Length: 373
Ligand SMILES: C[S@@+](CC[C@H](N)C(=O)[O-])C[C@H]1O[C@@H](n2cnc3c(N)ncnc32)[C@H](O)[C@@H]1O
Image 1 (cartoon, rainbow, N blue to C red):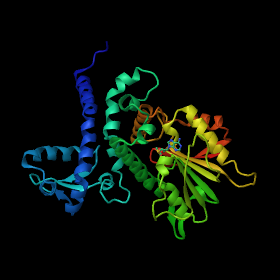
Image 2 (image 1 turned 120 degrees about the horizontal axis):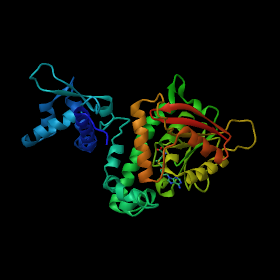
Image 3 (image 1 turned 30 degrees about the horizontal axis):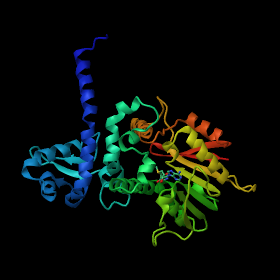
Image 4 (image 1 turned 90 degrees about the vertical axis):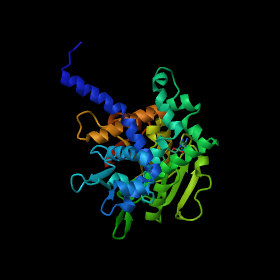
């Protein structure tokens, strides 16, 4: 066996410690969301909130002040980056201010992103991570099924208290992500809102579009466009809720594996990574039938928003790549899905009968792909 130097051994031990304790960081984020630490920093943070102000605002008992200080430190390192910490003079109290990440966790932030972490700390999701070793050695079931006795989608359709709670968190997480993505897709212009993706499109279907955030933004930006959200019947039941939705938006309960309403353009945002290749080809064939048009010369297309896994040595930064790898593992364990590299995407599009595709943009670690029938 190769001998390590003492220095290498100590470094290796640190690496094991770092990743062993990383769940304490995730759990500190959960704690910060539940206790509304970002809101406390925001309320007292002009320009920064002192530790004692936070302790008093959050009613941390004296016996826990040291633990609270530890947690704030963990959330304020260069790599976690949830708060920035200042100390005017040596010996003075530490003061904390918000960073872009903690601003997204403020309770009333328009683009609040707290529901995704909370979804992942829900017992039904959190607990499957502890059975990965037994799950990996058995056939077929997802780790989620091993722990919860049902597939993720079947579990969400259930009526038990935990299922309803998980469903609420899941669709809230989709809403907050979609709110952020809409910002990138439909941009404000002098004359209103615009998106190159939708120029000239008369009708649009958001396939498995959840509660319709993206479709509502598109419908609002393009009042002449007929917009449809297709999702499972129990998801779109009762939608559109009273008021708030544009009149050119319709919700349809259905199954994307059976058929997709015809339109000039269809969107698949964060859908295909949920499924294995065989299922994806079935969904894509339904989408291809939906955008095949009536033989005129218009441009019909499908828009896919999902990750295109970067290759080792690509220009993508380490954070993007790390997120892609974690999503890939999450999709494999939660849903039997996967993230795909460009060759894998190309293979799926070809197998479903599409003629060509083009990666037209990026939103963080995700890509926007136009696919042509
Ligand atoms: C990861 S979510 C993405 C939702 C939405 N596109 C977004 O990005 O916010 C996956 C969606 O697929 C829907 N879904 C699952 N199976 C479906 C099916 N057979 N037909 C239609 N929608 C389905 C779920 O209800 C959920 O809304």
